[in-house]
Image 1: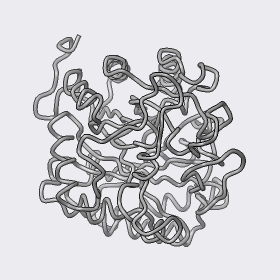
Image 2 (image 1 turned 60 degrees about the horizontal axis):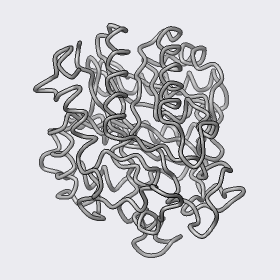
Image 3 (image 1 turned 180 degrees about the horizontal axis):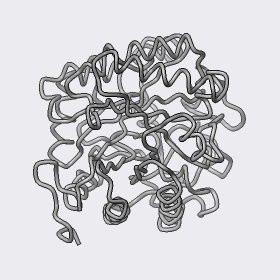
Amino acid sequence: MTRPTVLAYYFPGWHPDERLSTRYGDGWTEWQLLQDGRPRFPGHRQPRVPAEGYLDESDPEVMAGKIDLAADHGVDAFAFDFYWHDEGPFLEGALDRGYLGAKNRGRVEFTLMWANHDWVEIFPAGKGEHEVLRPGPVGRTAFDAMVDHVIENYFSQPEYLSVDGQPFFSIYEIGSLIEGLGGVEATRDALDDFRRKTVAAGYRGLYLDATVWGFGVLPHAVTTAKPEELIDKLGFASASSYVWVHHSDISAKGFPEAQWDAVADDAFAAYETYSAELSVPFIPNVTVGWDSSPRTVQDLPFEPGGYPWFPVLDATPAQFERGLMRAAELLDRQHLAHPMLTINAWNEWTEGSALEPDTDRGTAYLEAIRKVLGTASSPVEKGDAA
């Protein structure tokens, strides 16, 4: 087995941002939501408590600790959720001040996943419609400004993840991309210009990745019925998965807790289809869990009804380990030159999906990665993790 590059999605919502402070109060972060969470049914693991405390990720020393923890357990890169709306970047402090300021950042590479979805009012969410605070689709002017910013400030960093000399850049919602840019042809033109600018900056090309999924999770999510057609038309180099609940109707898998194996089976059935039908390499995902209850108004009943009132998916470390093994086997069958695997997530604490240690399970999820895949310097040989 060729060891895949392990990318852990990184949600940068754990540092003060002036735009959030203006709306929610000085210094507000989602740590407040996490601390306010409470158990909604017997055995519900809330509130989750980070083992290292409620730290500011934009502090380079704090980020340095995360980097060491990730590298020691087989995480090769942080895939930062990157927010860029019409007014420019948002929640950039974790990357710009934290990661790029960390003295040990060379131990873990980084890349960007442009989270081009609507930013909606779910902090916390009540029942009913959710106000759109920042629309996900952007026009060509904002897109071009983002491209210039990304090439100059991130691709230029020696730690930026590349494939055969091509910077890796992932896009979350193909539908929102097309909507904002005005159609498929206009989108292809914008992406071609992104490629030209990347080559002009001295790189061999641009490795564009498209996140593919069939079930909308966030309010106003734009899914794509036939991603294989658009991936070809737009010239993407790979396709990837962000989280298992994008591939399973989790609401039909039980409430308040979803059946773990049923959701996993749905996800891997979708992955088999993508691997067979797509003309580009497919990057599977392994999900730590799903529990968005901290993002709900806590005095409302916890009952089915759309985001974030979804059933809880809470993997045991052993279940997570089995998911890693299934993903590794899938990749092994594809015989890819550059296999990759995504994990949701390094720190999606308010969505119940965090590799980072908590006071209940410690480093168990991280240890599962090292057990199944090893590290870049010490990979696990085929069969050793069985």
